[in-house]
Picture 1 (cartoon, rainbow, N blue to C red):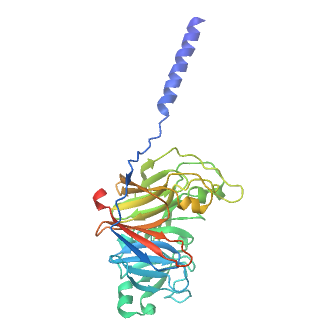
Picture 2 (cartoon, rainbow, N blue to C red):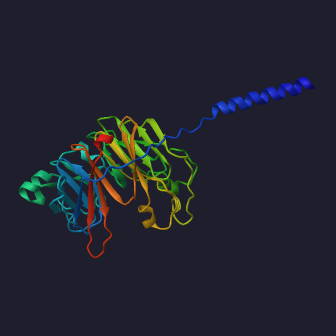
Picture 3 (spheres, rainbow, N blue to C red):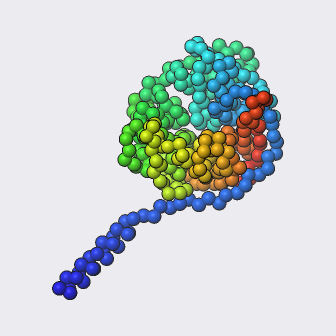
Length: 358
C-alpha cells in the first residue's frame, strides 16, 4: 500500500514537472524610455482642414484631408511654406473623391509617381506632382486605374511589388488579421489572428484591428495591434518572424452595443509611420477613459523599430495629439499638432532632430 502511494506521488511530481516545463513565460520587451530632444524649429500652418495622413516624399511634406476643394496639401519640408493645394470631389479621372496614400509611399515612390487609392470609387490614382508644379494642369497630371476587386474595402494598403499588396479589410476579418494579395495569381493569403481568441466573427475586425507597414526592400511587414499590446514582424510571405509584447495580452471586454471592444479599452497603437530604415509606433500607456479628448491628451510613447525587428529607441511624449513623419535625409522628426482654436484654426509643426538617438 505504501509503495502504491509513493508511486502515485512520484507520478504526480513527474506530471507537474512536465506541465511546468511546457508552460512558457511571456517575454516582455523592456522599454528604456528617454525624452525627446527640444525642437529646433516650430512652424504655424494656417489651415482649417482635418488632415488624416501626412508623409514626406523627396523635398515635400504632403498632407491629405477630407475637404471637398483641396484634398492634397503640399509644403516645402524644410521651411513648411505652402507650395500648392489641389484635388476636388467628382467622378472624372483626375478628381479625388476620397483618397488615401499607400502606406509605404514615402520610400517606395517618387514625386513624379505617387500612388494613392480612392476608397469612394475604389480606384488607384497616380499623381505626377513634379509635372503638376511645372504645368499647373491637374487633368494631365492625375491618372486613374481600376483596383482589383479583391482589394476593395481595404485599409493600410502597402505595395510589396508591382503585383503584390498587403492590407487589412473588414469583410475578410474572420479569415485573418490582414492579407497578402497577388493580383496576377489572384492568390490571397490570410494571416492568422495573434493571439488566437474564440469570439464571434462580427468582433474580429475591431478586436484584431492594427496598423500595417511594409518594406519590400527589407523583406518585412510590421503589424502593430490596437487592442493587444504587441508589435509583430512578418516576412513578405506572411511568416511570423518576431513578436514584441509590452504587457500581458489581455482580452478586452467586448461591447454588447457594437461589434468591437468597449470604448474604455486601451488603444495601444494609435498611429504609425514608416521609412526605408525605421517604423515609428505611437503606443498609449494609460487606460483611463472619459471621452476621446482624454485619450489624445494622455501621455504616450513613441517606439522606433528597424526592419530587422529590433526596438531601436523608445521616447516619452507629453500627449497623443500628434501626427508624425520622419525625414531620413536630415534626421528630423516632425510633430504635427492641431491647435483646437475655433476662432483661428491652425496647426503647429515641430521639428526635432533625433537621428543621433537612433
